[in-house]
Amino acid sequence: MSVAIRVIPCLDVDAGRVVKGVNFANLRDAGDPVALARAYGEQGADEVTFLDISASSQGRATTDEMVTRTAETVFIPLTVGGGVRSADDVDRLLRCGADKIGINTGAIARPQTIAEIADRFGNQVLVLSLDARREAGQPSGYGVTTHGGRRSAGLDALEWVRQAVDLGAGEILLNSMDADGTTAGFDVEMIDAVRSVVSVPLIASGGAGTVGHFVDAARAGADAVLAASVFHYGTLSIAEVKAGLAEAGFEVRTQGALS
Amino acid sequence: MSATIAVLDYGSGNLHSATRALAATGARVVLTADADEIAAADGLVVPGVGAFAACMAGLEAVDGPAIIRRRLADHRPVLGICVGEQIMFEVGEEHGIVTPGVGVLPGRVELLHAARLPHMGWNTVNAPVGSRLFEGVAGERFYFVHSYGVHDADWPEGALVSWAEHGGDRFVAAVESGALSVTQFHPEKSGQAGARVLRNWVACLG
Image (cartoon, rainbow over all chains, first blue to last red; front, side):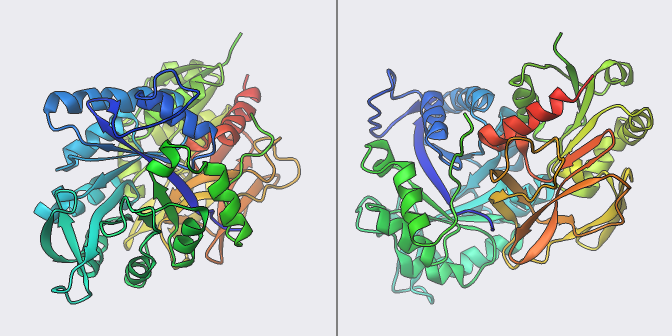
C-alpha cells in the first residue's frame, strides 16, 4: 500500500462567499463555503482548496474568518490560495487554520517570497499554483500566464516550476489554461512534461469532464486531481471519481465503516 | 467528568487545528505553556509543523523538553504529532544540521529515502496487535505531510511501533511506549479515522 491519489474540490470564494455556480440540492445555502467544505468532506474529498478572489482588504478579512470557521468543523487539509504576497500573509492564513497556502502571482512578481515562506514554515505548506498554456515562444512549448490566462508572464512553465521547487515550493498545482473550462480532459502532455522536471507532489487541474479524464491525469503522473464545476454541478461525485481511479489500479482513500 | 488536555503552546503553526480536533472528542482543552496548568491536565499534546530545529528552539523557549521529560518520568500521558512526534527522538538531521531532540525515544530523524517528497497525502498504517491508538481503524488511511522520519531504532521493551511506507521506504508512523504516544501523521486532519485515534488516546487518560 502506498499514498493514495488525492481528489480535491476547489471553491472560488469572494469576501467569504462561494462564487461561480455551486449546485448542491441538499444545502439550504449553497454559497456558504463552510457548509460546502463540510459536505465535500463528508463525501470523501481528500482536501479542500479555497481560491480567494477577493479584491479588497475587507474581502480578505472576511475570507480569514471563513477559513477559521471551516477549520473548526472540517478535519481534512485545507489549502487557501489567492492574494498571497508575503510570509506574513501565510502566517495569517495558517493561524486561521489553513494547512497549505497556494502562491501564484506573488511568486512571479518576487520569486524570493517562495524561499522566505519555506524557510519560515517549511516547504510542505507551500503550493506553487501556476496557470500554464501552450506558448510557442517558450523553450519547453509551455508558458506561464497571469490574469486568468489573459496575459503571458513571459516565463517558461517548466523552467519556472524547476526554479520554484529549488526555492522551496513543496507542491505544484498545475492549472491548464488551454483545458480549463472545456471539460474535454486534463492536458496530460503538460502534466507529463512538468512531472518529468520535479519530484514534489503534482496536482493536476483544468479540463475535467469525465471519470476517465481523472484516470488519464493520474496515469500522466499527477499525485492529486483537482476540479471545480464537475463537482459543484453534480456531474460527477467524489466517490465516482475515486471508484474510477480504483478500477484503473490507483490507490484511493475510501471512507470505511467509520462515521 | 471529561478529561482535561493541555496543548503545549510554543508558537507552532497547527496548534489550533489540534486544539479544535481534541475538543471535538469531548475533552476540555487548554492551550498553554504554563507548567502548573500542564501538570494538572490529564494529557499533554505536543503538535508541530515546519523544521525540527525551529520546533526544538520553540520548545526550549517555553521549557518544553523539561516539562515533557518530567511528565513522562511520572508516567503521565503525552501525545506528539508530526514534528511534535519527531522531536521526541534523540536527534534530528535536516539540511545537514544535526539537532538534539527531547530524547524520550531512541532513534534518529532523517530524510526519507523516497523519490517523491514531501510524502503528502493519505496513507495506510501497519499497526501491531495490541495497539490501543489504532483500535477500530485497521485499514483506514491517515493524512501525512513530511519529508523526514525515523527508519528504525532500538525500541524500549513493550513499545508498539506502527509503520507506513512511501516510495519503497518504510518509516515510523506511530509509537506507543508507556505514557508516550506519537504519530507522524496528523490525526487532527485525518477525518473520521483521525478523530477515532484521538478518541482512543483520550479514552486512555486519567
